[in-house]
Length: 295
Image (cartoon, rainbow, N blue to C red; front, side):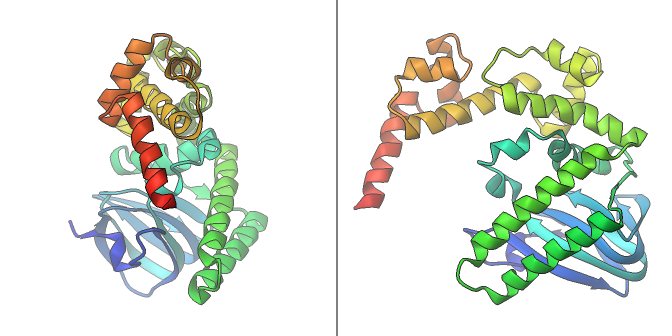
């Protein structure tokens, strides 16, 4: 499989984002993405979307996300015009916790791309005329800014992109097909974890919330997110702890409690396992880095 890196499209390391109109008069060869995801909005025409060995019809108004290492391409194109938005989710969504609490976001940007790659997932978000016109206007605005590169263009594009992601995520939640409902079951549990990770959450509760058995939920979750539900919750807690260590003077024991760890020793052990240093060493290191930057 040919794997394309993001630097082919943009050399910017501090703003890993690229947007363009794509015109396809012939087939687009099978390829994968080495280090980025791609949001695709079909603006005109139709095609067969090839994912691995499967083929799915797509047409004007369809929206979908392709994540890393998914082999895909387009065949049978007819007046096919799309918008490609390429980005690194781990950078652009890293500190946007609010959007990660949206079931529609988890479904569109994480679960559905995984199902598309591994479970013959044929359903796509389809924009109706009014929403399609609004999304086209947002895309046009972003592309104009991206190409002109006037003062503040990166901030402008980033803000527009996040607005687009929120809009599409809300629309995804309104889609009512059997395949979408299966995706939303898992996504809703993840969104709950994102908003309540500092509280006590059991896998049994999450499984019940999703409508799956505990064993099935744990298996499906690990397939989609790469870690177990408990490991996912722990990672969220450690990320929150890192923020508090950097930005507050709170004692480490209080930070542990605020992040959902009832035992400070267990918190320190898990923090070191994840971050490579103890909480106090992490705080000192981050303070030193800030001091050096200020000099």
